[in-house]
Length: 154
Image (cartoon, rainbow, N blue to C red; front, side, top):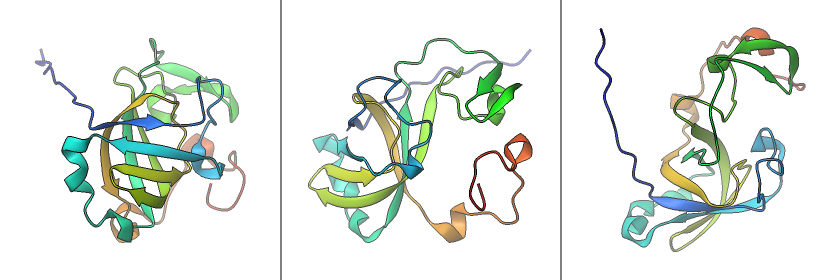
Protein backbone atom coordinates (compact mmCIF):
# COMPACT_ATOMS: atom_id res chain seq x y z
CA UNK A 1 0.00 0.00 0.00
CA UNK A 2 1.33 3.44 -0.89
CA UNK A 3 1.82 5.97 1.84
CA UNK A 4 0.03 9.25 1.21
CA UNK A 5 1.92 12.36 2.15
CA UNK A 6 0.19 15.39 3.55
CA UNK A 7 1.32 18.81 2.49
CA UNK A 8 0.61 22.38 3.37
CA UNK A 9 0.35 25.13 0.79
CA UNK A 10 0.97 28.69 1.87
CA UNK A 11 -0.49 31.40 -0.39
CA UNK A 12 1.97 34.10 -1.42
CA UNK A 13 -0.77 36.52 -2.45
CA UNK A 14 -4.28 36.98 -3.73
CA UNK A 15 -5.81 37.50 -7.16
CA UNK A 16 -8.10 40.46 -7.84
CA UNK A 17 -10.11 39.98 -11.00
CA UNK A 18 -13.27 41.35 -12.61
CA UNK A 19 -14.90 37.92 -12.19
CA UNK A 20 -16.91 37.74 -8.97
CA UNK A 21 -18.16 34.17 -9.49
CA UNK A 22 -17.13 31.06 -11.37
CA UNK A 23 -19.96 31.67 -13.83
CA UNK A 24 -18.45 35.02 -14.85
CA UNK A 25 -14.92 33.70 -15.48
CA UNK A 26 -13.99 32.61 -19.02
CA UNK A 27 -13.33 28.90 -19.64
CA UNK A 28 -9.80 29.87 -20.57
CA UNK A 29 -8.43 33.37 -20.10
CA UNK A 30 -6.01 33.53 -23.04
CA UNK A 31 -8.57 35.21 -25.32
CA UNK A 32 -9.73 37.69 -22.69
CA UNK A 33 -8.63 41.33 -22.76
CA UNK A 34 -9.69 41.84 -19.13
CA UNK A 35 -7.00 43.04 -16.73
CA UNK A 36 -6.55 41.34 -13.37
CA UNK A 37 -4.25 42.23 -10.52
CA UNK A 38 -2.01 39.65 -8.91
CA UNK A 39 -1.21 40.93 -5.43
CA UNK A 40 1.90 39.40 -3.91
CA UNK A 41 1.95 39.78 -0.14
CA UNK A 42 4.48 42.38 1.02
CA UNK A 43 6.65 39.75 2.73
CA UNK A 44 7.31 38.21 -0.72
CA UNK A 45 7.62 41.45 -2.76
CA UNK A 46 11.41 41.24 -3.02
CA UNK A 47 10.95 37.99 -4.97
CA UNK A 48 9.44 40.06 -7.82
CA UNK A 49 12.78 41.73 -8.57
CA UNK A 50 13.43 41.75 -12.35
CA UNK A 51 9.99 40.36 -13.26
CA UNK A 52 9.32 43.44 -15.43
CA UNK A 53 11.65 42.01 -18.08
CA UNK A 54 9.27 39.14 -18.85
CA UNK A 55 6.35 39.52 -21.25
CA UNK A 56 4.54 36.47 -19.84
CA UNK A 57 4.42 34.69 -16.50
CA UNK A 58 2.89 31.47 -15.23
CA UNK A 59 0.43 32.03 -12.39
CA UNK A 60 -0.35 29.07 -10.12
CA UNK A 61 -3.37 29.35 -7.85
CA UNK A 62 -5.88 27.44 -5.74
CA UNK A 63 -9.43 26.93 -7.01
CA UNK A 64 -10.83 27.86 -3.60
CA UNK A 65 -14.48 27.61 -4.70
CA UNK A 66 -14.06 24.12 -6.15
CA UNK A 67 -16.26 21.55 -4.43
CA UNK A 68 -15.86 17.90 -5.20
CA UNK A 69 -14.87 16.27 -8.45
CA UNK A 70 -15.69 13.47 -10.86
CA UNK A 71 -13.02 11.40 -12.57
CA UNK A 72 -14.96 11.50 -15.85
CA UNK A 73 -16.32 14.88 -16.98
CA UNK A 74 -17.99 16.74 -19.82
CA UNK A 75 -16.28 19.88 -21.16
CA UNK A 76 -17.44 22.98 -23.07
CA UNK A 77 -15.60 21.73 -26.19
CA UNK A 78 -17.13 18.30 -26.62
CA UNK A 79 -20.34 16.37 -25.88
CA UNK A 80 -18.48 13.23 -24.85
CA UNK A 81 -17.13 12.28 -21.45
CA UNK A 82 -13.38 12.46 -20.82
CA UNK A 83 -11.02 11.61 -17.99
CA UNK A 84 -10.61 14.48 -15.55
CA UNK A 85 -6.84 14.58 -16.05
CA UNK A 86 -7.31 15.21 -19.80
CA UNK A 87 -9.29 18.39 -19.06
CA UNK A 88 -8.78 21.79 -17.47
CA UNK A 89 -11.75 21.43 -15.10
CA UNK A 90 -11.31 23.36 -11.83
CA UNK A 91 -13.04 20.53 -9.94
CA UNK A 92 -10.13 18.24 -9.07
CA UNK A 93 -8.81 16.17 -6.15
CA UNK A 94 -6.10 18.83 -5.74
CA UNK A 95 -7.67 21.97 -7.27
CA UNK A 96 -4.65 23.79 -8.66
CA UNK A 97 -4.98 26.30 -11.47
CA UNK A 98 -2.18 27.26 -13.83
CA UNK A 99 -2.38 29.98 -16.47
CA UNK A 100 0.15 31.69 -18.72
CA UNK A 101 -0.68 35.41 -18.64
CA UNK A 102 0.68 38.54 -20.25
CA UNK A 103 2.46 40.79 -17.75
CA UNK A 104 1.25 44.33 -18.43
CA UNK A 105 2.86 46.22 -15.54
CA UNK A 106 4.27 45.98 -12.04
CA UNK A 107 3.45 48.49 -9.33
CA UNK A 108 5.44 47.45 -6.24
CA UNK A 109 3.80 44.18 -5.11
CA UNK A 110 0.95 44.31 -7.66
CA UNK A 111 1.24 42.71 -11.10
CA UNK A 112 -1.26 43.78 -13.74
CA UNK A 113 -1.89 40.87 -16.08
CA UNK A 114 -4.04 39.99 -19.07
CA UNK A 115 -5.50 36.55 -19.77
CA UNK A 116 -6.17 35.28 -16.26
CA UNK A 117 -9.31 33.19 -15.72
CA UNK A 118 -9.33 33.11 -11.89
CA UNK A 119 -12.16 34.64 -9.86
CA UNK A 120 -11.71 37.54 -7.47
CA UNK A 121 -10.20 36.47 -4.15
CA UNK A 122 -8.39 33.40 -5.49
CA UNK A 123 -5.33 32.46 -3.40
CA UNK A 124 -2.05 32.87 -5.29
CA UNK A 125 0.39 29.97 -4.75
CA UNK A 126 3.31 30.76 -7.05
CA UNK A 127 4.60 32.72 -10.04
CA UNK A 128 7.15 31.51 -12.56
CA UNK A 129 8.53 33.18 -15.70
CA UNK A 130 7.26 31.81 -19.00
CA UNK A 131 10.32 30.78 -21.02
CA UNK A 132 9.45 29.50 -24.52
CA UNK A 133 12.68 27.52 -24.97
CA UNK A 134 11.90 25.63 -21.74
CA UNK A 135 8.09 25.63 -21.61
CA UNK A 136 7.14 25.03 -25.24
CA UNK A 137 7.34 21.52 -26.66
CA UNK A 138 7.09 20.55 -30.32
CA UNK A 139 5.70 18.51 -31.92
CA UNK A 140 2.52 18.25 -29.86
CA UNK A 141 -0.54 16.03 -29.89
CA UNK A 142 -3.83 17.32 -28.51
CA UNK A 143 -5.62 14.02 -27.95
CA UNK A 144 -9.40 14.33 -27.93
CA UNK A 145 -9.09 18.16 -28.16
CA UNK A 146 -7.63 18.00 -31.69
CA UNK A 147 -9.64 20.42 -33.89
CA UNK A 148 -12.10 21.36 -31.12
CA UNK A 149 -10.66 24.66 -29.87
CA UNK A 150 -10.54 26.55 -33.16
CA UNK A 151 -7.56 28.39 -34.52
CA UNK A 152 -4.19 27.08 -35.57
CA UNK A 153 -2.34 25.11 -32.92
CA UNK A 154 -5.28 24.99 -30.49
